[in-house]
Length: 283
Picture 1 (cartoon, rainbow, N blue to C red):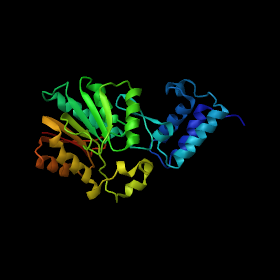
Picture 2: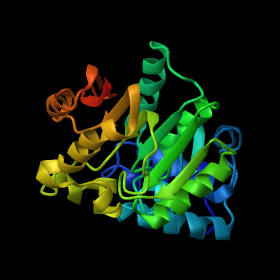
Picture 3: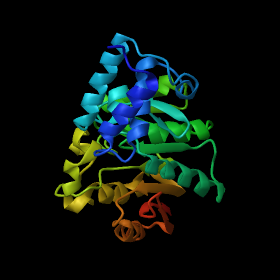
Picture 4: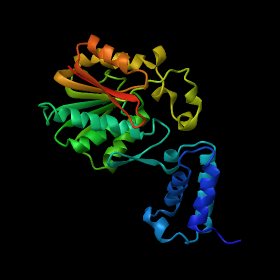
């Protein structure tokens, strides 16, 4: 029996993925492009091209892993975020499209104020480095620091810095502010763990394969947000900006916490699903 064409292989995989993914065909296309090492245009130009035996075996193994629930990003080892391509692994979260709103919100917010473009920014819980690197790429005169308590995540973020040729960003191992010491910043950003450890969604989808320490926090998902906000005045310059990603039902709590800690001009922004997702304030 001859090996299948590209189109046939994608169609078969998409059919298999249909019950467990809302993006079944896209999942199949991404996996196959990874296997054949071609750009997406190749799928339309050469749909009848036949896979080699080795390519089919590799593709089949990836399809089987995907059917077990393994995230696409882990299977191909990368994820596009903002204008960057990032290496990913199971040491930290896979960057989500909704988190691009955090980058977008920071950029639009600082354009409304007289912000020091040669200032300093801090990304707490940096993970892959997605947020810090995206902002560093857009604000090349600013110096960015990404902090994460996970040594493997720091090494991953540092590799992503090199892969994307970004020179104005550094990564350190730090439990939130613990290794930041007495530095002051013009911007603090964070996408911290904010899920309640008892949330049933933790047993579904891609998050099953991501570290719970990067997803959940005590006090019904609020403890890390509280710590970041309460300590932020010790690290922000006057009129500095804090921007936080949070749960869809945590906006009111985050706004109140920011207000209680001396922040002004507090505002919340909605994500692609029309949920409250990003809240900012100025010190």
